[in-house]
Image (cartoon, rainbow, N blue to C red; front, side, top):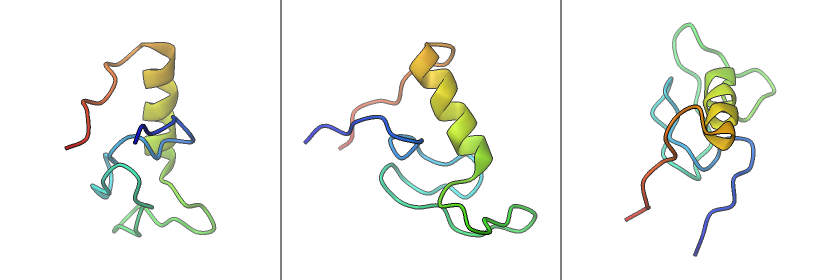
Length: 60
């Protein structure tokens, strides 16, 4: 199955270490509120889609 880039779910979270496809969890100093993903993960995904950072490797 191929993951389609969407909001950052295709990347691991740099804040809470949620794996690809997992929702983020609350972390000290980084509450989620009503969001499903940390803003840092969404920002990283935007950079990956623009080609500014390397895309994630294949899932195992």
